[in-house]
Length: 248
Image 1: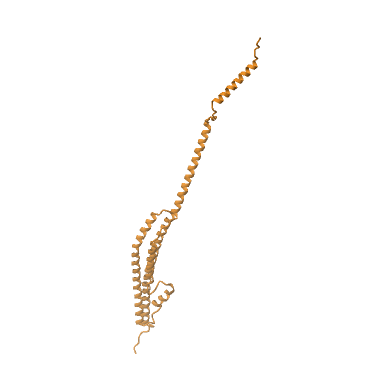
Image 2 (image 1 turned 90 degrees about the vertical axis):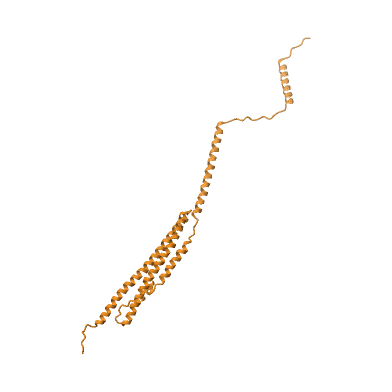
């Protein structure tokens, strides 16, 4: 019996079947594991991400600084709106009231425009030639008393102004201290206004003192003028019409 050799296709098919069988056996022998992704490092992408993070952090820092500046601005505005007290105002008003009371005590010719002319005509009439000697003496005595009262009144006002200087000195010290410790613009402005108020009060005192002084000086000059007028009237009355006396 003669055996024929197998063809090559049959041999290749057998080999493939054997490989497939081996693969199936391997699949049955070893459990399957999931595939893991490979990590790929990209330097360009990493640099871009780092730069973006740095810029974002810078923006956050800028926003924080902006909020801090706004908060500080609000605090400064609060300080600028803070007010200070003015306890010396009552003292200044009281001292001015004391001067006003003294000015209201003027006698003879008062500091009132409505009654000044009438009072002046009563004390200083235009002519006393028709008055008797006793009436002239009484009028002169009244003018002298008015003049002395005016000088006394001037000295009283001066004394009150001098006394007020002591209280003004303490008020000035307190105002300057508050001005130096002012926290905001409003407090500094109020302290300045307080100093201006003290200055205005002192100017008012000076004006009232000058008024009292010039009143006394005016009364003295008016008395001199009235005395001259009275002397002239008395001389004219004594001389008469100038006709010499002729005995009978």
